[in-house]
Length: 114
Image (cartoon, rainbow, N blue to C red; front, side, top):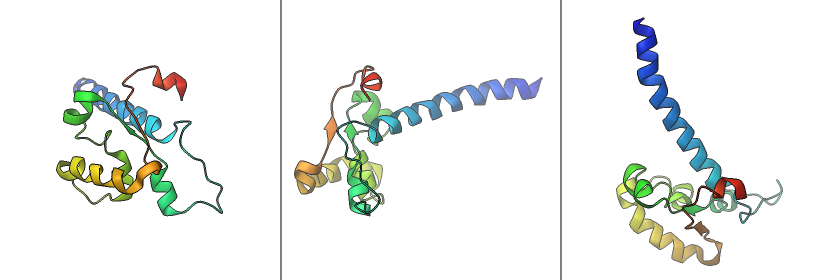
């Protein structure tokens, strides 16, 4: 009986957390605006830039520690800690220019559009 209670108390929250992270990863890597490269054209820099920052509002900033809003930076310079990511993301946006992609729609319909 204790295994059942333990499974409910840890399995439920864990599966909810994993589901949310998978949904975020799906949204950041599968947007139709992102380029798809053929194997001969792909390289590390193009792959790192082929992701999208999303704005999840307070949840993204305070619950997920800006990983949703600074995901392009995470792919480019993954060694920057989360508490410096916001400032570093501003810099990477300027460097990437037109190659930087973001979406500020905090809309559940985004899943249907992707």
